[in-house]
Amino acid sequence: SVHKKDIVKKRRAKFVRQQGDRHIRIRGTGWRKPKGIDGRQRRRFRGTRPNVKIGYGSDKKTRHLRPNHFYTFLVRNVQDLDLLLMHNRSYAAEIAHSVSFKNRKDILNRAAQLDVKVTNADARVSHEE
Image (tube, rainbow, N blue to C red; front, side, top):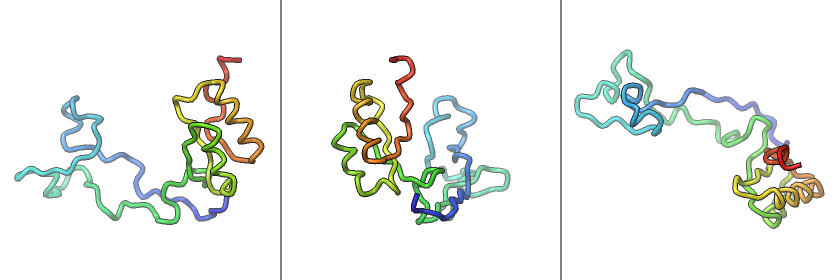
């Protein structure tokens, strides 16, 4: 890969929604800003969860990089793969979930010709052959 800068994540844990540990209906729904007039979390009382802030953002140079220092590019057909011809040192292909086994084989063959890294190359292969 071209990128050599270390990837630093300022926070690995997900931000949990206010009272997301108490109610199953909002447990996995993702972050919402607390807006209550008396809310402890909005007022940043001690002992409450951290709120989302701009300071937790990643370095612009390493944002969206995978741990192997490649960006991900979603591929649905062989023609999509040809877009990565000049960018095979910085972008890795990821085959879409809905692609069939037959088309996957074609994409993998073309990726080998173009020297493009495929992140999920072994998906849906083991049980078919």
